[in-house]
Image 1 (tube, helix red, strand yellow):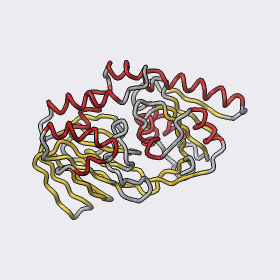
Image 2 (cartoon, rainbow, N blue to C red):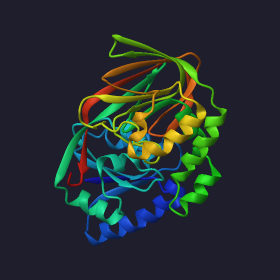
Image 3 (cartoon, rainbow, N blue to C red):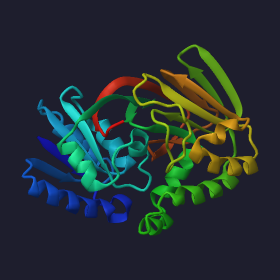
Amino acid sequence: MYYFIVNPGSRSGNGKTVWKRVEKILEQEQVEYRVFFTSYRYHATKLAREITSRNEKLTLVTVGGDGTVNEVVDGIQNFEKTTFAYIPTGSSNDFARSLKLPSNPEAALMNILHPSYFRKIDLGLMTYGARTRRFAGSFGCGFDAAVCQEALGSPIKNALNHFGLGKLTYIGIALKQILMFRPVPFRLILDQRQRLRFPHTYFLSVLNCPYEGGGLKMCPKAKADDGFLDICVVEGLSKLTIALMFPTAYWGRHTIFRGIHLYRVKTLEVHPEKPLPFHTDGEPYAPENVLTVSCMPKALTIITGKS
């Protein structure tokens, strides 16, 4: 059985347009399916929780952006009986880019209906206070989370989405935030043994996949199924250097700059000196000052294209 969770508002209404194209093919192919539409934040999590609590073997298809993927993945209750699939409609689509999933809706759907390739991928688990949040692609704390927060309700993003240029929103907001953000001391504990301190940190990214922020290849060697999470710490750079660094990150060349630190871990404790905003898969949250991140190895079965 195919269950579709559709975010109709993804990319300023593109989700609704894509669903109409998908629905037409489903009817032509006489596919048995059910569809659910999201109408508020975390609705996809609630729907995924309800759908996957029925002890039924199923394929759960997300039609939306990275934020919708995040909500669905966080809601899955039975990973053993759930096969995940994805038709990207968002502004960034970093998850699809990282896994080389088809971007064309018709191609993506046919790949789901007639799958040849399956992959078990890791997920990240972020803990803050008594709460937890899974993520498929990325977690970030500091400057990049502030960018996500501002981009969430940005009218510029909505305007650019109409021209297929939504990811440029992040560049413009990032340049603005560079001028405003003051670096913060961070303490990190890697795998419960290695302790690091960075006195002037702009942000920290923890990635399960190479890309975040609309195509920034922040952790070029990250792999979604290697049992590890990759870390990129940006600290000790001037604001001008950071502004020059960001364009190079689209090709993963930012690693040549001093002040870029890369690590690979199974668990990570994050202790900024003061509470900072954070995000999972681009979805922002209120500031926290103690965060723990861990890897859930090969937790999710996903339909992929030919690798």
